[in-house]
Image (cartoon, rainbow, N blue to C red; front, side, top):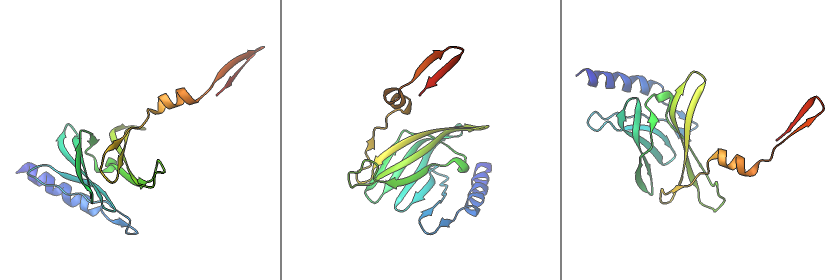
Length: 155
């Protein structure tokens, strides 16, 4: 009974902050006591649902579009202030849109650990995202020169 009351209070609190932004992006939150499914975010015809809540994290994220629905073993914190961000864009310029999802894995004082996932809009298959550190290492050049009593660092 206490858990149901807490969920009801959370539902009312979350609904008070929901709204729309020029009809384009709508954040909705829906709690279902039986299966603990939470609608995290909606953008156009794309909806994200969090499931399997454990230790302050949703341990599974489901993505639903007009093309279908697919679950992923991703995680996101359960704090509504850090629910996922969704964008739609043609990132690889192939004429088809991709769904960009930014998950928050953790947060604290001045720190926000996030993870990026990119899905093809038509079949919800995930595209590989190169590790940004590997990209920097491969594509940057640096040098250090000692000139008299000075050091010149070039990146």
